[in-house]
Image (cartoon, rainbow, N blue to C red; front, side, top):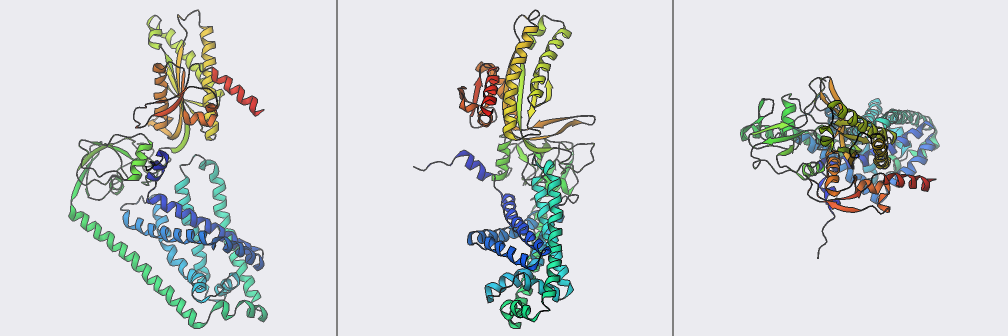
Length: 577
């Protein structure tokens, strides 16, 4: 009997798309680039240091499995880059995306002569061209060769850095790491270029010695004129092929545009009353970019966030089925309604009406694709706490008396949250959302949230004691805790913007809090949070619960008396001591 794939594994593979493959290949190539640049930097020491460095460099990168991974990554990354040039219909010209594309497409043309001179010559003729031979060839030849190689280094490095920036900019650690990454991005190519210059000058000086020339510049290293002519022909042939390939892609784009116009025009109707007539084949986000309609998209249309989400109005049967990547992103945010789609992935084939779920800020003036005005994606732990019986509490009291008690309750909760390292975020009536993890790692955030739950119970117990003369029955409460990736940023209108978090993890925490009523407990904590805090090692009841909007049950831990969590906190401190 065939064992079904693990749900987490299936979800992982569903999340892999063309962009993820291109990113993985780009990381392999950028790793090679860093290794090569650091090797170049050894030229600031001596030619001998260059020779020793390149020995270890080639020992690693020419190891067969690594070499296969490197060349596969190069071919796949270049091929997907050309495919992206064909596929992408609209670009946000106010971002670095077009620059990254132009730089990436120019790299094969710039680098191939170097590859032919070093790698292909070794494969075809067994020539041993290392730093002495390559540096001498550049510095003894025409000056334009030096400038070409310098431009190649800078273009490759800039392309890679832009790609890393676009990938990491929404990661929670990026803001803290950005200054160090920027320093590295400037320092490494600078040292590499200086090493290239110094190594070239040293090679020219060494070439004045006949013995050095006989040892390093023989035909065994540089090849015969016939071999060099053959290599030049290979370089010329590649240039013709590559330029022809780019020309063919441009031609294919033109043919596609003509075919789309002839294939039919559809109408996109926005919730603000605006309608666009666009050719079939454009995604909704591409149509918005083409006609300058503000449309939120933190990741720039890469299906790495869900901020471009739209809700289709009316019949959804004519919509193309979601791609695996789109289905993965929608599942991550709990969007099971077939009318909710990603604007960057949906390419309607018939008229469609919709409204945007995330509207770009109307006052910032920033482009809709900029992340600064919308927020960033990061892991946070959400804690929802709600006061039980506040309606009954207000029945026999003056309004101001009720407000006083509710404020005392929220004050006790807020003190517990802040003392544990969290941040009170939203106050909704007699309930509150607190966030953990804005400046700490995931494990610490989970631990802080559990500690806060225990301290909330202690504070409320003390509050009940102090108000016992005025309360017919003690204040009761419910707590829900869950962690996950959310979008954090400022939400609101004009002068009424507030910092908050949006996402499935926040919704689940709220629903767990609501479940404390039916399950007869004070706190419900998701299994993921419990695992990070070590609660799974204690005798805390566990069960599977159905969460509205999720297809599979969630394993949670129920805590009848939340103040018991303080005992676990003290036990953890004793163990640490």
